[in-house]
Amino acid sequence: MIEDVSLNRSTPAIVRNDLGKKIVVLLILLVCLLIAGAYLSQQSITRKSASQIVERASELLLIGEASEAQQEIEKLLRVDGDNCQALLLAGLCDRELHNWDRSKEFFERAKGCSEDPLYVESVSVEYALTHVMNWEFDRGISLLSEHLVKYPKSDKVRSSLISVSQKLRRSDIAEEFLESRYELFPSDISVLLDLLQISDVESTVDSIFFLEEVNRVRPHQSLVNQSLGEAYYEDGQIEKAEAHFKVAISIKPELLGAQLRLAELYLQQGNLSEAENILRDISDAESSHRYWSVMSLRAEVNERYDEALDSIEKTLVLSPCRPEYLARKSKILRLMNRLEDASDVTSFVAEIAEAKFQIIDYREKFKSSPPSETQCLEVAALCRIFGKDKWADGWETWSKKISEMKNLSRDSPNNPFADAINEFYPSESSQ
Image (tube, rainbow, N blue to C red; front, side, top):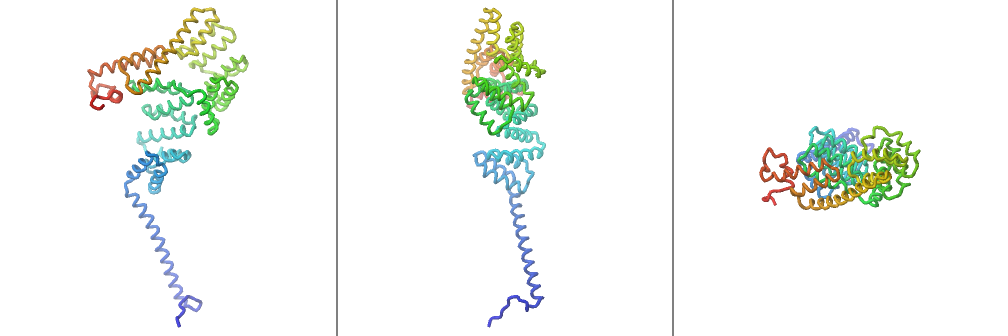
């Protein structure tokens, strides 16, 4: 008969205790092995150069494999949660996957990770772009504007501002930035080329469709509602324009563009009291061309034509050659029975329209080949017709530099235009 060796009440206590101790020891060893395995796993990741993991994740992200890149980065962050490059890449991965909040959290963590200026610039700009890509335009444009001061050379800021301004039909945003950038970097011909592009905006119908979708997904943004008001105004849908201007002002009461547009709309409708209520609350607007345009319209409605003409002249000083302002000047001159002067202004409007077509033609040419010395001078002349003297000065400067290239070595340390020349006018050996 086989002896039953199972533990029962008759089994001596000392036997039971020894076996229990062995079980406890085995359990402790098992836990230790698990901990050691996890530790060794982490150590193996750590030993794999962190830079290799970052490089691998970057490559995956570049070819559109954001999920796989994210998995690689998460492995690294579990071991080294303060790895600067990993935090930046994690933000980019989540942004690509439209995990907007997580993306912004990673960028916010990355901000304090390093004091290296280039790294800080990269993180700050990507953080701003994440807001823009998520259609948070009020916050995104505010951040980008801050970066203009800190990182005036950033190509990402430049291209993003141009793109956003076109989407929001706010070329003034990009124009102001590009002009200030050119003052800082007059050797950068790409800025002059960009200035020729910023007048391109979406068609009114396309703009309305896009902006309404933004407003549905990300409501209560002042700039979006102002842009919707502008688009509906241009499309002749006055009631909708008025509604969006009011919403924009309710979100941001000091939004000058929306205030002036709404006042202009009321003046055109003959609603003088509402227009006066808005204008009464506006202060420090004398530097705005739209302000003087509205003042001109107010004077015209009240048949104070001398005052209307004076105001529209101030408008044209601030924004020369704008067709709608010139058209108003022509109208006021006709009302004053100055028909010959009115005809001259109308002819000038036609000249501007022709110049615009020529600018568009040059712009298309420059997409495939760099401008020549003669073309630079021709574009400069067209810019002067538009009243863009700063732009014209830039193009004339470039015409001189192109002619000087025959006598100026590309590699000369005295040539401040060397980088731009090499980019836009490659040597024959590199072609």
